[in-house]
Amino acid sequence: MDLGQLLAIFPPQLRGILGTLPWEKVEEIRLRCGRPVEIVLHDGDLWLGERGELLADPTEAPPLSPVALTGCLELITKSSLYALEEELRGGYITVEGGHRVGLVGRAIMRDGKIYSLREIGGLNVRIAREIQGAADSLLPQLYDKRRDWLYRTLIISPPRCGKTTILRDLVRQVSDGTAQIRGRRVGLVDERSELAGTFRGVPQRNVGLRTDVLDACPKAQGIMLLLRSMSPEVICVDEIGRPEDAVALGEALNAGVGVLATAHAGSMAELRERPILRDLVEARVFQRFVLLSRRRGVGTVEWVRSIEEV
Image (cartoon, rainbow, N blue to C red):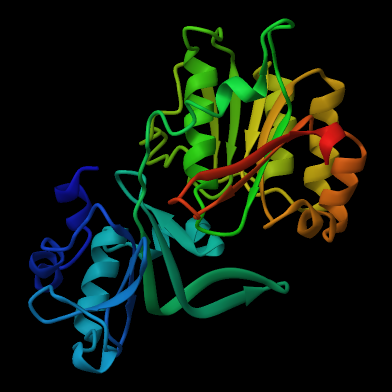
C-alpha cells in the first residue's frame, strides 16, 4: 500500500496525525461531522486523539470540524462533486490506490430511486489491501487435476472475514496460472469496485494477466455481457443474492463457464435461509463451498465441502 497516496485524500490538518497510525492494523477510517474520528482496526474500534494517539474513550477525542470534512471531500472528488453523480448513486467513490470511500448525507430522489447525495455528513475510507498468496492453500482444493477443471465455488462468511481478499487472490492465481494449474481467461464483475479497485479504467489491485474487469456494473448484467463479448473460462462475482444474479449464474452454468463467487452467511444453515441462495445450492450451480471466519485471523478457512457434503 502506498501510504503517501492514501494520505493525500485527507486535508493537511488530518494528514499529519493520521500518518502516525499503525497502518498494518487499520481497516477503515470513519469521519463524521461534529463527532470524533473512528479508527476501525482488525481487533476493535478506537478514536483519534489530537496528536494521532488512539483512545478507547470517545469523549476524550476531539470532534471532526466541518472544515476538515469538507476539505477531505474536496480532495476525494477533486472539488467536483457533480462530476461523480454516477458514483454517488451507489454511495461510494473509488480513489487512487483502489481504496473505497463510502458517503452518507441527504439523499436526492428521482422516480423513487436515489439519484445523488448532497449535504455530505460522513465518510468511510475503507483501506484496500491485497495479500498475494492468501489463497495458496485453498486453490488446490478447488481444482480437479484429473479433469483440469476448476470447481464452481461459493465462498461464504460473516462480514469482515476476508471473502474479498481471498476471492481477489483466487482470481489472480486462476488468471496467471500456477505451477500446477494453467492460467484461464477470467471475467470479473466488480460491482462495488472492491476486487480490482479500478481507478480511471485501470485496476489498482493485481487481478491477473488474463482478467477482464467490468467495474461498477450490476452483477447480473455484467455476467451476461461478459458471456456474450469476452468468452471467459471463469466468471467471478462478489456477494451474490438477488434473483437476477441466480438467473445469470444459471446462464454461466449452461455455457460451461466456471464460477467463483461469495455470499454473506455464517453457515450453510444460514445460507439456506435465503431463498435465492438456497435455490442455487439445490440447483447444484456450485460444486464446492468454503466457509471463512476470523477465528485464527481474517481469512481463516474453517472448511471446504463438496455439494454432496452440504
